[in-house]
Structure formats: C-alpha cells, structure tokens
Image 1: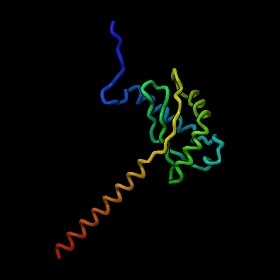
Image 2 (image 1 turned 60 degrees about the horizontal axis):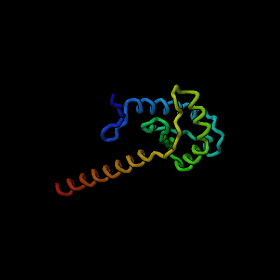
Image 3 (image 1 turned 180 degrees about the vertical axis):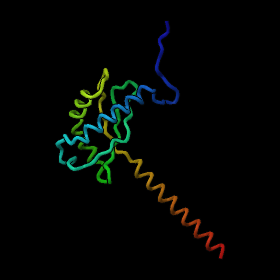
Image 4 (image 1 turned 30 degrees about the horizontal axis):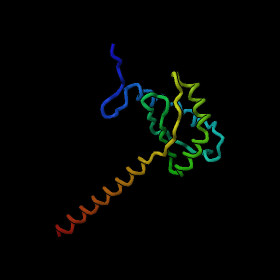
Length: 137
C-alpha cells in the first residue's frame, strides 16, 4: 500500500496549518494581553500578534508581532524571545495539540511597508494633479 505524503505544490500551507496558526495567534494574544510578563521592556507595551506561520509538521511556529502605536519592535522581539519558555508553557495549557510549537518571534514590518507605499502613491497622485493644472493653464 502506498504511503500518502503531505507535500503541496508551491509550499502553500494546509488547512490544518492555517487553523493551528490562528489558534496559536489567539492564545498568544490572550497571554500577552493579560500582562503576566515581567520583563521591563514589555511593561506598558501593547503588542499585536499579527500572524503565526506554523511549520508543515506543526512543531515550530514563526510569530509576527508589532507594537501598537509604534515603538521599538526589535526591543519587543528580544524581550519576547527571553519570555519564550513561559509563553510556550502557557500556550501548552491553552491549546489542544499533540505538540506545543516552539516559538520564533519576528518583527512584522508589513505596516511600515504599507505606509511607505501609501506615501509614494500619494506623492505620485499630487504630482499628477500638479501636471494637469499646469498643462491646463
């Protein structure tokens, strides 16, 4: 009998991985928002867990975080890495899974990139408006 593998074309995540990512994201958001973390770098910070990408075997996950309202994302990532053991233990208590994924924290730069793109588009739009006005005179 042939063994069925879970390879997918293009490396797209499976439904199971997507579902696990959302469960982990919600659980981590809850743990972080409770304010149980004692690290001074995290005191008074509101942190958003924007996305969780589990590995195909679900044994590890990349957690994308950003400070709400701006702030030093790199300092927050370092503090979360120090608290990784505590966060993983709390996560293990909250989710029903055969494995509790090992967590890897990364600063999410998507919001910064979208702001830069919006600024460039706005400048291009303003330049086009100026051209029409000048050409129309």
